[in-house]
Length: 428
Ligand code: KE4
Image (cartoon, rainbow, N blue to C red; front, top):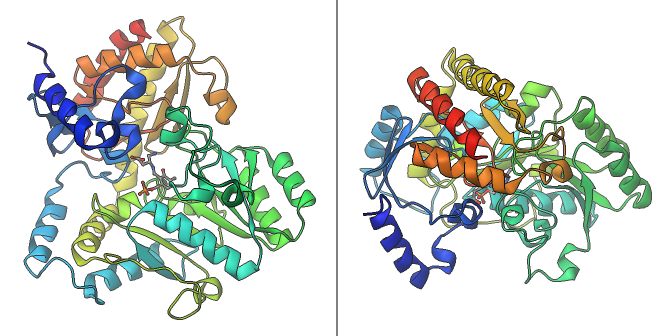
């Protein structure tokens, strides 16, 4: 009997009810040659599928579960809050507490609006930047993913790249004609866009550390250069910190790099696994948001008390002394172990790691943009992933995604992962 019998049966049913059987494409396991697993529960560093197979989890719900699954402090707070009710569509204390907490933590944010997803955050931030500047064009970078708002589905990373969809059907050219593309880490190409469209570019939106083409770090001077360009040309610099926010440091990539954007988009960790996104920045810009200003943006469940509680409980744990050092140590152990394995093999690899994010590419090239990331051998990645899964390691099912390290990972988990990788590299 297949060890995935129940999962496969459920997936067959899901295919009848849901497009592709999943509610988000990147979960589909399309590039790793098997049906996705139905996960029954999670605790700490582990998840268990409906067939009872247990895995060490490096997806962590694609980043939100930096504390691991069902962290006791988060669960306790959610249980307590939900006794008061679920949602009111009215101001509540928890959304104010979460908002004030983020304003205090993130250097660029003087004023913030909570929404329900990273997509809403980036979509709204771009609308605001266009209103603030009176301009239409935006600059994004190939391989970066900022959610699925129409104008951003251009040379996007994550599930778009995984599915090999250069852009998405259904998005009118009139929606994307204002979206200008430059290669990540290419300041020259970005500068040329501004020289070509002086006074027309409303915003640059960038993942300050790219994690949707796999992990790609900004090269020295890249973010500083974007900051200077935006200032010089009167454009709004938007950091999409949906992944890096409260992950790379308590103040995100902007605190870690010292480059301060005009607007910041957040998601994932600030909801602790429930649906919270946010955009925020200078009061001068944010005051244009309705109802204070005229830039309309709304959401039935924005600031939902239960979701805000999950986010707040998560951030309060992250605020504790030594947490990021602990995350760093765990990821150091994993990175050093992988590098030791790579030294013992003749394969072609490039390991990109920053903070508690890492991606192993199957290419000899230095991966510093989407083109080099795309040179990775996808067949090797599939063999690697399948072998890890069979050994109880739940690795992101796409070469264009980051592995997320959680605080719940133990040395035993990491050593088990390295042992599995030693075998899996032979299948790559
Ligand atoms: P959501 O709308 O999925 O909450 O956030 C969109 C988004 C925006 N910005 C960045 C930098 C992001 O990484 C994301 C979403 N990340 C993907 C994983 N790389 C979500 C997983 C999925 O699409 O199912």
